[in-house]
Length: 337
Image (cartoon, rainbow, N blue to C red):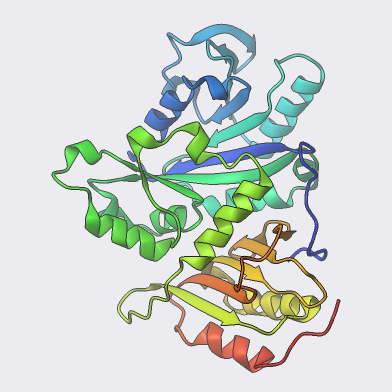
């Protein structure tokens, strides 16, 4: 957890960076190809594993640098030949030196078998990247035909859904229904995120663009979470709530100890906190042991001033987190900061 609960980039101080992930064959590249035709993406840089996977033959205007092409839409498209951090640093330097056109957003497409957690960890902890980029939105594509089987068989597919800020449901046209069972499974893994059919997945709907919009989406995610007490599923949603303000230092100590003890089994944590000494709600948003900088929302919804926490866990007894929380805090109000 960051030491300062209110650390946040000033508006415009960092370049928003979004990630498109999803299991093998789920339509990441098809989605990206369509997004690249959107005029609103014209000031974006796109990083992919191989340029050849993007249908750029009819879109490319010129080669700007080695492994960097300028598309007709105005987007930069770059091949990640090795390390993601090195690629982002180089791209930023090229932007400063005028070697590539200026861009105001970066979109990264991961490989289908990628565990998104290390990617998030890298983007949220590298000091040089944190000065230049702000992790904005994680978008996950899910195959409507094969998604249920993939979620049962592959831990990577589960993590890709759990970390998502937006979910795109692909290949619905190949099914005879609206995939109700898959939608229910996705809601159980990631409450508050409503899957978008691929034909409705526009850049405006997928990318948050501003911290305010991202935090409002996070608050909605927490408000719509439903505790999953099913005993047969290894993935559960655990919800906590208290009307007593929390001491920030005590809370972060507790959360740090919890993640230290159970880190790999806690896939996602989001929350809206009533912090003692603060008039406005503080939001936290983390993937395993890595957290976005905590931020404040503008105001509490009327009649809803209370701490709400949601954990998504895998292979962790459902009583573990609630028992730990209530043992530490009980009904006590937190001391002022």
